Image 1 (tube, rainbow, N blue to C red):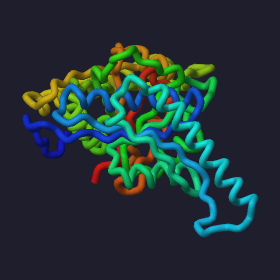
Image 2: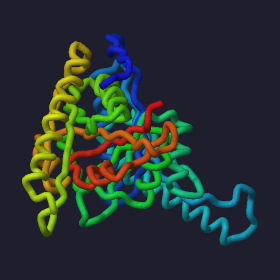
Image 3: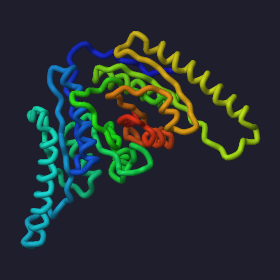
Image 4: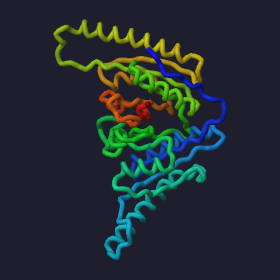
Amino acid sequence: MTLLPITPVPPTPLPATTVLVGYTQDQAGREALALGRLLMGQTEAHQTKAGQLIVCTVVPEVWNHPSLSAVDQEYARYLDEHAQETLASARNLLQDVPQVQVQYLKHAAKSTTAGLSEAAAQAGADVLVVGSARSNGGRLSLGSVSGELLHLSSLPVALAPQGFEPQPGQVVTRLSCAYAGTEVSNSTVLEALRLAGRLGVPLRVVAFAVRDRQMYPSLAGYKAENMIVDAWRERTKSALERLQEQLAGHSPPISVALADGESWEEALGQVDWHPGEVLALGSSRMGILARVFLGSNASKIIRASPVPVLVLPKVG
């Protein structure tokens, strides 16, 4: 297994992190705002200059030239009032955050996805945060906006699970990185290592395997299936140990773990999760260069994750 060259985390102060939250005046928006605070709040303890939190609400574009129509003017006025009301609700939720660190932004665009992407690019954001769609299929469900962002964004996209409500003053405590043992996965580990160094938290590299439930035994029988799983565990354990050896001596500290189960929920439940932990995932090899693109396993991990997920764009 060959890893990319690693640049040790510099001892000098790191640049402040800019976090842009796609905010809507509902529960998903409040959860996204809570995750944005968590990520931005981390910078205050580890950097000389505090990070910035940008709260962005997207409204539909209206005609970009003056209109004499009373209907057009009324519609534009309605959109502005709705945006101001939405941002006011966010400001109320952030009363205890120094307002010099928060920017409230209304951005007009042809779609919410385009608006958030444009606003993040214009602001020079380091990460884009959105909430989870309302669903009974798991704590973290992709909606139309988050799904499009995860396929098109050139920035890391953080997803807040349903019911996400960290304790006051909570900061990121550990970054876990899902590991598949491939060259693409190696690159993701290195990117997660750099991010963990920026956040000032330890990194854990975790490998997961899932044995699909079967109504009847395969022709080879359950014994053969168990042999395959055992072989995977030994091979993956060796790969994780080699990875840990290659990264030894670099900051931040690194640990490894592996787990398997008959479902992704069971596999993710086999490892411990700290309050304030975030799970990082890499993009699929099939993705557009330097953009996020989810493979099938990554999508399943997102739906089963008990903690916020940060999806990283493909490197290189």
